[in-house]
Image (cartoon, rainbow, N blue to C red; front, side, top):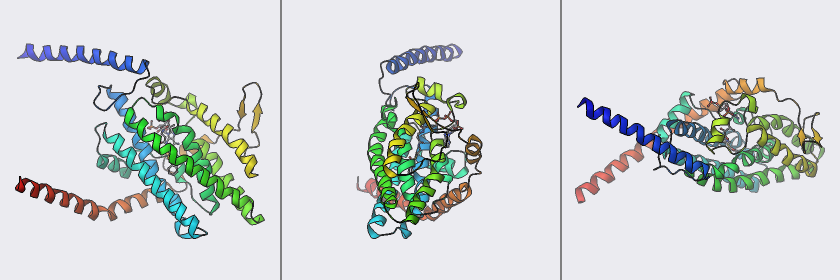
Length: 327
Ligand code: BYC
């Protein structure tokens, strides 16, 4: 008996080494990992962390924009904003489903969000104070999301990469609608132009923080890049984003609120001013302007929806019971 279990342990070590080699070879060939494939425990854990955080961000991200649905300036704007917020719910659902393929349930992920043990993007802890914020969120927040997420369409975990393809298409549309809101305001009255500029002043720096800490302070980047989950570092993507914004800000006639923004001929990129990382860490620690409000709203919505989940579960149970009787 003792020998048999020692043998099976030896077998499983040999197997996992062979499996590890196969996994490494697949990544080296830029292949994709499917849910049925063997994967190292930490690769699975990292994906659950990042994809879960991403899914939660989409769902919490509905709140700041939903705040303006009833106050949108026209029926057309209301319909567009409602469709956008619904898209974000859809993104959350694709991402929860993709994360479930790693062996965690949606209920478990939701429990982690509600308990505050899973993160969501820092950006959604800022308030939406004016209609122009719908423009700034589309232009800056969805713009940053696209920069970060287009490379994720090539992430090594296939269900994540597949979910990202559709999400990125929708995010591009969201970004354009945000740009268009700002463009219209910038062609409006002095008060409208002021409102648009004020909004960009408030959202610009937090949108740069979406890419995560600087590379030197990013504990997960090196391993995630070695696993082909992340294809570019946090700073590389942030720099790419600023390069995308500068000409668009010119078209809008909006000033990016960074007096130190300068073209660096040698690097062929924009140098930017110091990001307030103390503020970023405060937001991550739960002390941003809206953290408490966002979490309370999420908890309330979860409670309000309890009867729906229970009714659906009961209906499914009854359906299964009558199918069994009929069989
Ligand atoms: N906010 O080692 P690092 C959207 C955490 S939704 C909060 O660089 P990583 C949209 C990080 O989790 C957009 N936390 O981490 C929706 C880590 O914490 P732990 C959401 C952050 O994972 C509705 C620690 O800091 N996008 O577009 O290698 C309406 C160290 O960081 C943040 C995604 O989720 C942050 N900003 O890189 C409109 C994209 N940054 O877990 C729009 C997918 C870092 O070690 N995620 N942290 O305690 C990613 O690409 C990566 O997870 C990140 C961070 C680049 C965000």
